[in-house]
Length: 164
Image 1 (tube, rainbow, N blue to C red):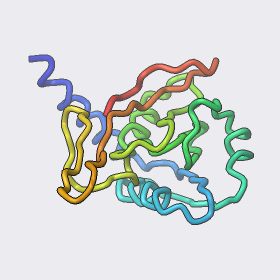
Image 2 (image 1 turned 135 degrees about the horizontal axis):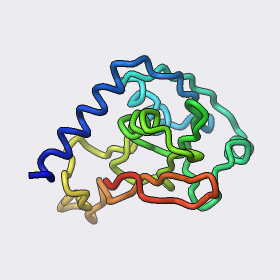
Image 3 (image 1 turned 45 degrees about the vertical axis):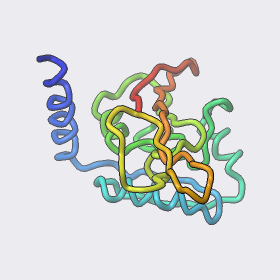
């Protein structure tokens, strides 16, 4: 019974959080990154006001935000004193803003397929499975893969915040 209630409670918490105005999220991307533009659009569609800054020096941005090297992705962002590294779901950013943990931010390291802005196609998998395209003329390719969103604590250590 509890397993059935958890998604409902989570949705209720997100809906409550979305009733309050969301802070501006500042997204930093390399110049001309289509996946980053898609991620910024995902954030907009989920109620955030997004300011996009394109730069040719993402390393400087990541150092300024104190993103641990092993957690780096392509886009970086700041919101309400937290960093957001990589293609993090808007709902998890909203949860972070509601919970206000003592942390540096959230990270989705690398570029996992299936993350916002990295969707290969519209089908999704509820169990975080790896999905392959089966084209008879080509080698199957991954269109969605398992990945985790990590909470980055003040000491740089991480814990799993969500699994996809």
